[in-house]
Image 1 (cartoon, protein in one colour):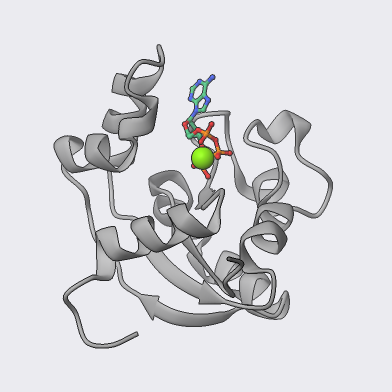
Image 2 (cartoon, protein in one colour):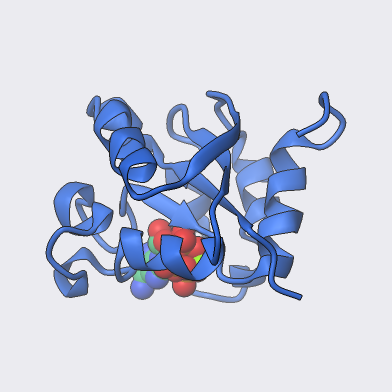
Length: 139
Ligand code: ATP
Ligand code: MG
């Protein structure tokens, strides 16, 4: 089933460098509506839970340390074809390979500190959105 929602986080590097406003502006101008948003800092343990699918990868510990190194801005977004359109807007994981005009091309510093996350499927968008927002008021 295709839904019209996706999940994103502006990552610690982009928040720390003051790019949140520019990134949110690009997201809204691309036609996404913000359904839920907050600013939080994860513990390394909780970052590890979020990225559990990568736990066997060599970069897992560094990723958990990085993702818990400062505040992030998780958001649930809505738009037709949200998951695929958002992955297009953020660009490739490695900013060196990201297309011109994408968020990662503009703001990412490295393959790890790559400014923003975007869910890779409708199923994961729901799981990841609930990870940050379930139990709060309706969204
Ligand atoms: P995200 O899930 O954050 O949207 P992605 O789907 O483009 O990114 P994944 O393969 O899911 O990429 O990797 C998750 C995150 O792990 C990346 O965004 C990046 O921060 C980090 N990462 C991925 N590959 C590497 C690598 N080779 N070295 C260091 N960090 C990496
Ligand atoms: Mg991913």
